[in-house]
Length: 207
Ligand SMILES: [Zn+2]
Image (tube, rainbow, N blue to C red; front, side):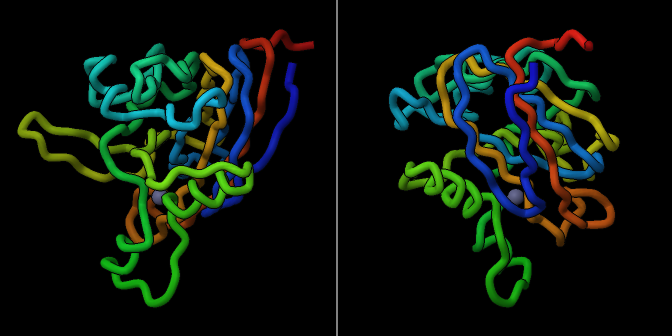
């Protein structure tokens, strides 16, 4: 059953409370959009998703269906229980921040996933004094045997989705990445909305 749903507007972030066992279905409406993703524990906001620990526990630099995102205390926080495009999601690149856009030549302020993270948390009356590394859903960063990596447009198509199951009570933070200079959000460099649905049973039984 779908409990609630929402839209994460292009280039913005949102925070959501989740109970253990609840599933978040994140849909890439146009297929092009990278979604920077974090979770913080409700019992202790000092516990948060850690890409270092996630790579170590999964013994993989990618994040794929069946894997769990773990915390800085090596506890599972969310499991990727479904992925319509069977992607290799990125765990390596940092969330974009204001300094990156300055270096790319932007005049004035440019929205960023790092700022979106803190903005979304502050709306939940929480925050962290730093920006943890993000799980970069739909981000297409192939890594070669020599250690070099590439940045490509997402391999997903319109309507592709992932389903993340919360393994503890947590605050989920999503950022529809504002990057509009490189092709990381698609060849047309246009950030788009994504949608999120929270369901209590997955897969849902259609009526
Ligand atoms: Zn970003």
